[in-house]
Length: 350
Image 1 (cartoon, rainbow, N blue to C red):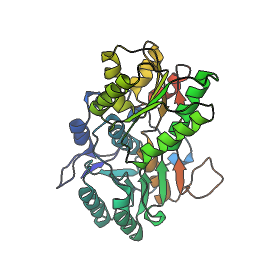
Image 2: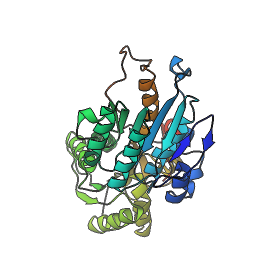
Image 3: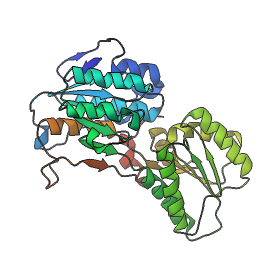
């Protein structure tokens, strides 16, 4: 387990835990050290809530940083905790092993931390141990993948998967300018996941509003390799395309490789999640990429901030409400060449 604070930085490895920086160094690509990653954009609130209070010990656990977005989740949480002298963050090694993640939370409970920020590999499987932490009086912040029970977390921070689809579909509708004969294609993520189903439903619903639909759809697995394979299949099946929405910018690296290999450029491509690499391509304007839809990788950083507020008995200063909300759903804005400079500083590296 690693402990990270502004006053004292130290790294120790005990049992199944390891320091976050070691994890990131082992699991992410070379861009993990890039200062333009999301973690460079996190900051304080610039309100009275920033004033130091009682020390808050927070346990943090997330899945393995096996792609850019997930790597940025942990990196941003660590960077956020580092902004506050009164926060001590204990970071467990990222894992896709549910049993190991359960044991990590058990350790946090035994250590009597004040709060736990948890992005579960499997929300349903992690629900009982999260409930156990809450019953022990520990504030639990659930990030991104929801638990099965509302009693398992004090507050939940979510991205808007349905909203991502709506944003991508609305961009296509507006760009098509009423034309009903456009060929629209979609490269989804893992089809069995609710988040993929929600994204596809939002895309379909938005297209329907302007008389369009998805003509060709394939699914990948959020990896570069699966993205390239899925895109190759799609391009062979669709000799002409007007629009392509790819759900995930990390798998988009492979999608773009397939497009290049097929020597295709007759369509407009919309990305998903909002990587810095894709935003830079949008800004350059010399590829099929014309837009992407943000799925914030700052969710865990928000979780750290909220955990600190809750333990110190503070509220969100810009709300009239005196309690921190039970749920926060983050926006899924469309990034184009017109507004890319606004979002690029908070983007993650694929």
